[in-house]
Structures are given as C-alpha cells and as structure tokens.
Amino acid sequence: MSDVHAALLGLSHPHSLAHLRTLQAVSEVGSVTLWDKDEALLQSTLAEQGEKVGRTTTELDSVLEDERILFVVGALRNDLGPPIFMRALEAGKHVITDKPIGKTAAASAEVAAAADRAQRKLGVFYQNRALPPIRDARRVVEQGLIGELVSVEMRMVTTQVQVRDPRHWLFNMDKAGGGILSWLGCHYIDQILNITQDEIVSVAAQIATRSGEDIDVEDVAALSLGFASGAVGTFHAGYMLAMSGSGYHNAVGYDTYVSVNGRLGRITYSSNGTPNSIYVESAHPSWASAPRRTFTYTFGESPAYGGASGESFLRAFIRACQGEGEPLATGADAVRVAKVVDAAYESSRSGRRVEI
Image (cartoon, rainbow, N blue to C red):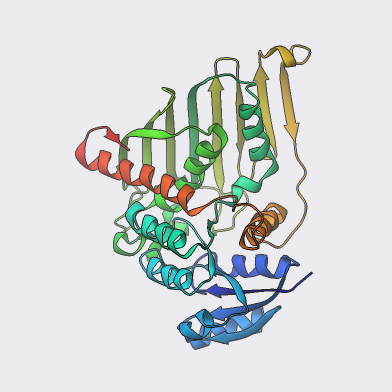
C-alpha cells in the first residue's frame, strides 16, 4: 500500500535529506511534496534524491491547501519552525517535526496546543524510542524487574565543535536556542523519561563553552536531576571527542553510557553509536534462575534515518494519523524534554536548583 501523500518542509536542516530517505523507504508513502524557499536547493534535491518526489514548490500555501497531503515532516531552523508548524496544523495537516520543535519549551508548547485545538497529531523525531534495546529496557522497568527507581546515570559525549562547522546556526543562540543539550542531549533526556516512565521535577546544572570556537551556545553540560519518585540522576553531555572523525551521521562519533538503577536491579548499556545490547541484573523472584542477562540485537538494514527502527517510528506516526493509536513520541513528550533543558539553562544562570 502506497497511497499516503506527505510533504517535507525545509531542505537545509542537517536532517532534511535523512527524513526524505525515510519517506522514500516507507512503503506506505506514495508521493512526497518538497517545500523550501530556495528554488536552487529544491532542484538539486530533486536531481540527487528525487525518488517519490511528486512536486517541488517555494509556495507554502500550495502545500497547505493540498487536500491529498495527510501529514508534513518539519525540518526547519529552531527559531523558524513553530509558526510554520502551527500553520500546517491549522490547515488540517498532521505534523511530525525534528526535535526540539522550537527554541524554548514555551515555543514548543504553543505548537502542541495548536495540535490539540486542530485535533491533529503532532509527532517529534525522538526515534530512539523505536529501537529494540530501548523498547526492551522500558519493558523491564514496566514489569517491575528492577523494582522502584533509585538513580539514573547518563553520559553522552560526541565529536568536537571544530569538525561540526562552528558557523552553522546550531551554534548560534538566537537561532538555535541552545547547544549540546538542545540539539543532542535532548535525545537522552527523552530516553530516560521514556524508559523509567518517571518525571524529572528539578534540575541543578552547570553549562559552559569550552571548545575555544567562536560560538555562543554551551558545548558541555553537567546536570543533577530530581525525579518525582524521589530518585536522583546525573547527565553529562559535551562536544569533546578529538579522535572520532566528523559528520552528523558518524556511526562511531559518540561515547554513551546509561544505567537505570532500581531496588531490585539495574539496566545498563553503552556504545559508540546505536546500542546493540543491554545488560540487566534483577533480584526479582521470576528471574531467580538467571538473574544476570545480556540481550543482543541485530538491526535490519534501511536507508531511513535511524535505520529499520526509523522506518518503524514513521510507520507508527502514519498509523496515528489514520486513527490507529498515538505517535511513539508526541508533542507533549517534546515539551517535557524542553522543560528539562530550559530548567538546566536557568539553573546554570542563577546558580540554584530549578523546580519544573
């Protein structure tokens, strides 16, 4: 079945072409309309990656007025996206955006409110939620195998600013709204909220710009987190790796570690890219015969952003647009993450713990 029509809004975002590959990989999508203000960019994209592209246009209204289009993918600069996403929702389109939706939690919340008013679905590309190891980690918690949450440890460091084009808008506060936390750290904050099903209710943070590059956003951050359950957490993020290459889709450009610790056990995983295994310890009676287990995964091949799991993530959103369930990551989920990020910035500015 390939009767779904979609549109991609924006072609200059670091993930634009990756989203286009996903739309092409998902069999449910029959055609894609491309919109951007830059005609030359539209034509070069059509020439290089034109599969399934039905038409291109510099006129946004012509996209929003097209009744065939079920949903739009938004890949726009953080300061420019929210008004356009709201227009799309008000025009009756379902919308799925790159994270974090907008520069601030308030801007993202406005888009989420517009989706509620229009009764349209709003999804956000926290597509790690579709990864089998992340889904299994969540199930372990849901099944009570590690017991009541005690603490969470997270580390995510990646390649340095100097190999990521310091002149890009991602490193400009007025356009991006933040640095490492807003752009990449948000994925890991969402990961922990998704796995634990707990709420982060307070943040104490130190952020800094230590790369030596001419940027005005943070490139390193250390957060202390308080959860609604009483558990505590830490998160360390930064553009730090000097010997791991460059590029925004560098499979070995990360050093990550996550540990979710409970009264009965823990879940841990680490990787230099997508985690392909998780380790679980559990003193739960149902695991008495094998209290320590490692789950290893082999992922299907796909050109989609996020591989085969990225396809699954978008398929779930399409089903939600068709009335079958909810997106795997909603606008409300994105607002929840953005509030943690905003609280970290406020904490670092004020030198005090910030309640959410």
